[in-house]
Image 1 (cartoon, rainbow, N blue to C red):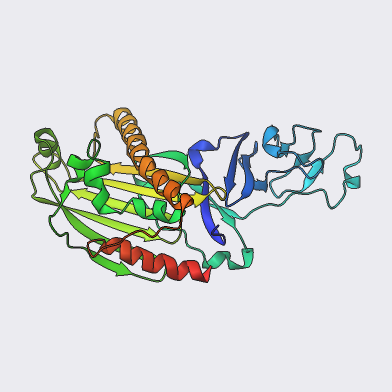
Image 2 (image 1 turned 180 degrees about the vertical axis):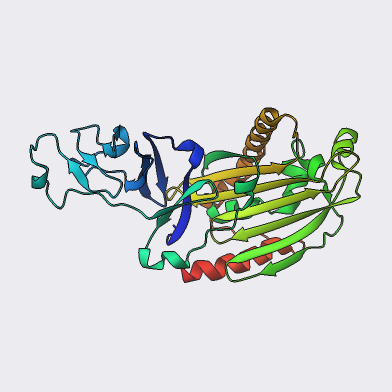
Length: 332
């Protein structure tokens, strides 16, 4: 599992005051909670008293209270109250649980997993759209290879086939027989773009425009985030529109992967925001469900026997991605 990284533990809208959220990231069992002052803590999901999950408990005032014997821990992980002790000064110094560094950025809480001396070297990708545009997010647990999950969003060739019933017409088909890609490989970042043929339905063309080709930009930040960015120019009385999809992913444990898809948009269904949110969330779930079938199928075959994927010349983004991934994976 890839540690020494910042990972999304939850979004702001998932963590209410006096609430807690349980997660497992790279084998680490975590609980994040917000107390009555709005202060947040990320702790190991384990009470040091009898080694039970703190997430079975509840928030109490400024603290997280274990549901087993009522021990209370503050946001730093220190035990500050034990019901059976009258004097809190007698609480053992060892009565504490591990806390994890975190930061709030782009409407999400990011937790650092790994060697804390290396946390300044880890990337949090720029997701400025999440501070500027409406967005929805969905989380999915699957049994898949993290490397294939990481590539899935910007694998342009699969959209015509896997998503033929969901987003194929909206995002257009690839040029055939060859798609021209622009690709820029940096140390931990891959960026690029390509054009799709606008083969939308007549209704979609009225709304999104008549351009022959639509530009799509993509990006990947090792090892956990990718982006697909589609722009639709101003058309008739419709303003310019934009659709941005992020995917964030991490290994839960040796068998499971968490995939979080985030969809942001600008000027799409702008006169009916509740419908836009419902539509985008529904469409996002459909897209990921279509992907999961093939991502899990790949792992099933690789688990059975030693296999190598046959990558060909037309897979330029895949080849660039593998180059970047393999270089950084060896470092980690």
